[in-house]
Image 1 (cartoon, chains in turn purple, blue):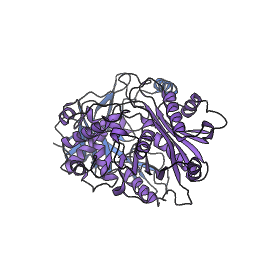
Image 2 (spheres, chains in turn red, purple):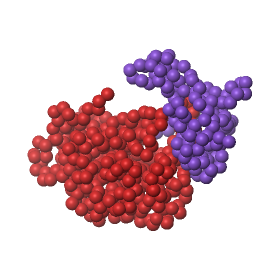
Image 3 (cartoon, rainbow over the protein chains, first blue to last red):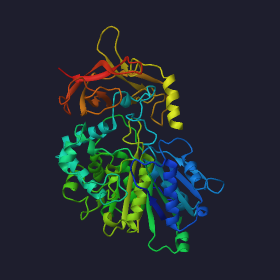
Image 4 (spheres, chains in turn orange, blue):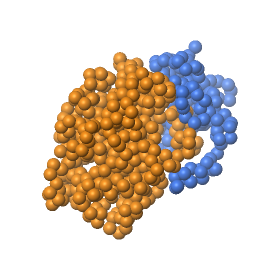
Length: 395
Length: 148
């Protein structure tokens, strides 16, 4: 079955006219307050009124039902003037919600919409509990003791077996993104770390140590999406344009798959670059789903920034750093911000919006004109991930 | 909170299993060696693991699926020593995937010590307790050990 390029029907441009990212961390405000803060911030930043928002999509994974309505009720916006849809795509929920807010504008259904991702995990999580195995779920991976760091770690093992990538390369990913986060006032972990500290931290799944894993945090992000007519009416100079917005489901295959690739990312990136008419060589900053250090190296490859098997070389040569070819995780990624599951995808997009507007101060990417955001969600048995949502923004 | 309450209700209804699971793993009563099973579609011939209700070929969807034993020996595709693991698993343990010649990849723990398995090792399937259920009883399923 041929994949259609999303947007090969008549489509108009959509713009991000306002955005807001909360800080990340173990926060006292619950998901509805976090989401409301982000939505309010994005609406105010856009210079529009609450009543101007025509449609809302709210991404969340674990906070239960009617999350979106709860968020907008805090702002007095839940009612007959604002249809709200709740979006669940596991870790991709926030990006997915924004994708739908964008689609509503670019396919001509609405003029102004909002996409939000919000999550509070720490207020609802018992100490020491992990996501419990449902013994009635015929999922052999879960039944047989697969932990998430182990799943990614097992891919690192194959990668290190097939290339000259070392555990020091994994540690250096963390050093670099923590250095970025140190300059981001919103980041959870703001103290830099050394390679030795990363390697010496608690062993989780060999070679993945504690500092190579993202933590569990809370946060929210939101962006207001609008048509070109609205941009002109509001007189917004240098608006941030949505060059592409792509989501796909994960291919399911329990056969002999190359787990150093990331099939869903590769497929989605291909669509993204075609839809945007922009390739990886033109991207200035990239927020990716770096839940574990190995993810960065594999995604440099899967997103087409370097050849297969050379992700660790791309990093060794400084290409993923400031002054290199593309700054990866300028906000500190998931590794330094933690992973507020449904919030992450929205944070990436809101932070990318800030970058393109030149608002990032000490962690600003120089001359940022093109941003890529990539968030996966998942998964289900046999799929590398269940969902992937990718965005390309330009200014 | 909705999600948490839902989980509590499910816990009360769950049957305590002691074998995982009869559709995809068999320990013959006559004492011959255990084996993993996949399910073959009689209509289009494709092989599926674990058991599926429908043939998962969207151009087929047949419900006429039959179990087939898979080879007992495969190769380690990847293995990793786990020090902080899944709930119910005593650490450290070795976890990973085994590629069986029929084109199926099986998730598994390995019978043996950390630092003693390598990618590419030939391994053989055995039956062993893999974890406990909520009542503290063993759950028997497959594990793989090095071919002697």
